[in-house]
Amino acid sequence: MSEKKIAYHPGCPSATTAMEQDMSTKAVFEKLGIELEELEDWNCCGALEAEDPKLVIALNARNLALAEKKRQDIVTPCSICYYNLARTDKALREDEKLRAELKEIDGSLDYKGTVKAKHILDVLVNDIGLAELSGKIAKKVNLKVAPYYGCYLGRPPETAFDDPDDPVLMDQLIELIGAENVPFSYMKTKCCGGPLMMTRADIAFEMARKILESAKKAGADCIALACPLCGMMLDAKQPDVEAAFKIEIDMPVIYITQLLGLALGIEPKKLGFNKNIIDTKKILEKVM
Amino acid sequence: MPIKTWELDPNFKYEIMNEPGGEHLTACYQCSTCTLGCPITEIIPSYNPRKIIQMSLLGMRKEVLSNADLWICALCQTCTARCPQDVMICELMGAIRRIAEEEEAAGNIKIESARPLFEKAFLHTLQKYGRLYDMGLALEYYPNREGSKIKGMKAMMKDYKDFGMRMFKKGKMGPLGGGGVFKGMRPEKIKEREVLKKIFEKVEEKEK
Image (cartoon, rainbow over all chains, first blue to last red; front, side, top):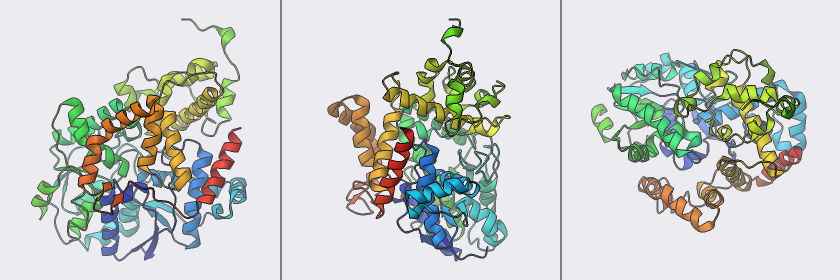
């Protein structure tokens, strides 16, 4: 990978619920010698709550244009921000009329389609590459991991950068750091229920329960993931899921950047291991 | 109940196809791949996207738009990814939901779901600040959902009591949390909020 500077779109949860993902992403890229320059004055992507595609496109054109001004590709740790940025980029590249309409709303929405929107997992595995990463591994992360991808890395087809049913990019990173992927392919891309959490918690909890219990049954020490909404559902809401079904799960949920960071020799505190809701002590004891 | 053909709206499918995301509706040949792989159907067996599509094609406008199942789609994109006809079911459902919201605003139907309220509260914070503001979102959503301020506060406390404490203990949210005294309690605002105002005005104008 030749660029040493990338525009960073942290996404809203990076400041609060997904702090550890933000911290570990920054720490890992710093260690790899790539500067993540936070996009100044970035705005929310609209998440999945902005159902009108016109609104999503306008909101994300602004972020893309901010990156374009800096002539930097834009990278985000959130799979929903990624989906919204990537589909906006695609729509605007293909539609001159739409570009003109946006420019008319405000000059700052004038995106010409010269940068790429990427998810950090894509950058790590496909741009930086496993070969370069393997040269920097300082520590074997001796864990059994359930790789959980959720929805927006392999779907929908227009923005996907991994397989929709059996994605592999996280599996490859997990292998690279010396950890073991437990059999989990039937759950890898099943929705966590996050988008229904605030309106139909009963359904959302059932969806999360299936994933958490499958990871446990597969003998995983932890779940690895790459999306703050999945993190919220599987980690922060795990005690609520346990209470709703009167079960005990106690399954640590770790962002893939946190695991990679350990392998790169970064200290756990810098990777936010004290921020995950389900205690990560057991994980760290096994690794350190 | 048999379908009364004289009550069908032959234009309903075109109405959907005019909405962004609804364009591919008529490509559906009812294979049911969407429904067989749906994680919601697995939990709520009556949830059937294939059936919603067929009812839309037939013109069962009122039945489709007032169907509460429209609002339990988790937007996971499994159906869109697997559809052999590229119907983009996830987006299609969004298009139908938007028509339902317009119908509700016009006083023609009643939506039996809190989701539109949640989405509106989310977008209000986004419009106002440029970023998600959980607290502001919750303070609008819960009272609207419960129908009164007091009931709303009670429901909010119930959901947030344990969850909020967890966040607080880890310094992720709350007064005196690790990342600043009022982390997450006050909105993060972007500078160019004027642009957001213009965006929302334009989108709302188009809807009219």
